[in-house]
Length: 246
Image (cartoon, rainbow, N blue to C red; front, side):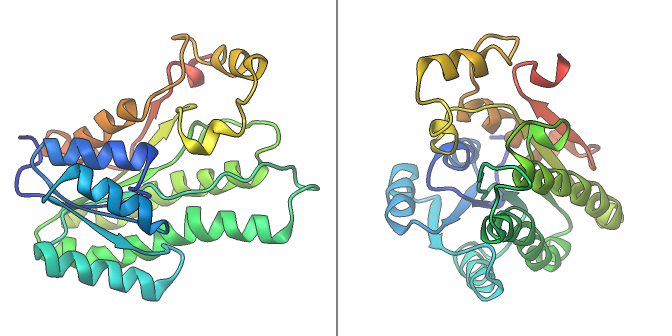
């Protein structure tokens, strides 16, 4: 049980990558709080994961709801050892076509939410003697793509926040790393691969010849949450089927 005695918060935990990470954490012995904005999905996920999982509805871009989430975690499990900042949105567009609302929503969730929740859990990780923050970045933290200007900019910010936070908190035994997924088959990307031609074109961008599955990302998250990665901080891990190697 690689995560025995650890308490983790996983945002965006009702489906997709977040749910796969929460499930892997529970299998490895962790107690997990999943959060998101869709109460129905959260409740179904928590029921699926069993007594070691608690669902808390929260908008990560809202500081008051962040406080509710952290308080609920401490009430249920008394401490916080791991945070997975997985909640995110992908709104397609160029610098000209994106609306101001789309830009603001992207940064409020993908960047502001990560900062707010990280800030809220740091004192509790410090009190626990250390912890691990895992930020969900993207291959677009490392490379560009057409029609993704807000998303790529926000994920580039996630990468740099990860490095800066890692330096700020290394001496406190709080590690901060990020995972950079390629295209993973989730609801988020379903809108972009609706026809077979689009699927083939995007699949070909990954040298291993397939899209990722949420479980592919969950394995990396377990490593970074566990004591096996105790000497890893400030790192970006592409989990992308070779996407960034081309």
